Image 1 (cartoon, one colour):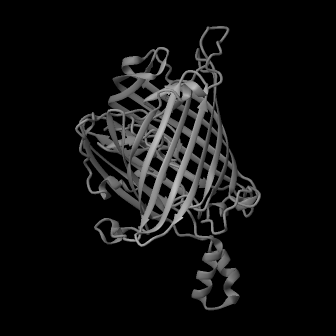
Image 2 (cartoon, rainbow, N blue to C red; image 1 turned 180 degrees about the vertical axis):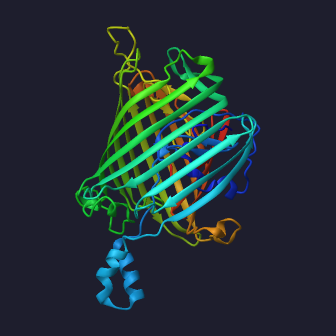
Image 3 (cartoon, rainbow, N blue to C red; image 1 turned 120 degrees about the horizontal axis):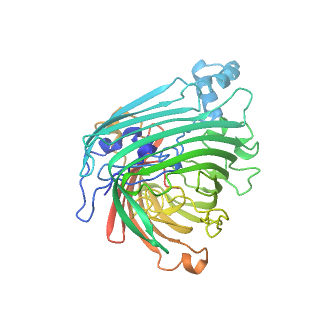
Length: 471
């Protein structure tokens, strides 16, 4: 497997469940080669950081957030404790007051490329504000590789009730990093390179929650668990947000110092989250449209990329074995319209560096392949999961697990098909598609979902330990 270096998403580390899962040291499958890979993305961690088999740490993913109890629940609970209906207004105020909760875990694992690695991760829920989360992680290996990640999520500025602000910073150094470089003219052919590598990113997330549907009571309230019935009118259901994310990413490879090593620009996204729960969804869906503008840096020209993603969920109900069964589907498509445009001055194409552009492979899409194994102009990916929540739940009584609140666990079967091409046409995108299939076990720990996916794709298999649902 591999050590997905960009390990920031680390909130997965949020309980380094590698340890929870039973071992701090993963074993390499017969057909796997341990390695570090490069990744980057806004998954608040995965924004980056993920533990994958073989001690794999991945980077860039979804932002970390903690679902708050609804105000109604908090009011009822506090009122009951006070024993007086006259205290309801007092309870409403109390519902917005949460004491900070700190959780820290040590991280220890060993891989062929990193050797023995030590570190720690810490998460603070309600970090200064009820809806805010702070995360930090640090790792150092016996071969002098290291990484660090820090993130602050979902903060508000007084009087700006509809706004949320988050920030992320990641830095990593890898003595034996494994990277994929696309071959000329072929987006699906990539050369694997081993090199000393340094990489990192910084991001500022500025999010505006539209005052409609679930956002009508403000941005903080929109993070509460959704109790209302789901419908497909964004004026009444779900949370609609607009976000602007200035970013700076870099990747410097000692063996390939001629490659572009920095990407700077901003992302603009429109998102409609119409799920009944972000952690354990059984109804609704989510729509996301994102535009990324890469700025000109030195002799590297500017570039433009867009991505669209749609998920949908349907509950199949319960039976004697499962409390709930859900069919979850996801569709993703992306393109780089500036791909074939040529800069008049230096005659270079307006294309992003491979670490910042369109890609498949990793802990969220085409999970049977290495992170960012396929890069190019355009991509399409289809994913289908059958998720089951067993009535039998032994985790809360097991060592380590009994130290935390683990309300549920989930089993899943998954299958994916995707492709990356250098032409944005339906025929090219659906020709010679790569497939992945596998199984997954997931559970919620202190309001944060930890998932472990074992997925096969091509001639290899991957084992990912990550935070958050893939979609």
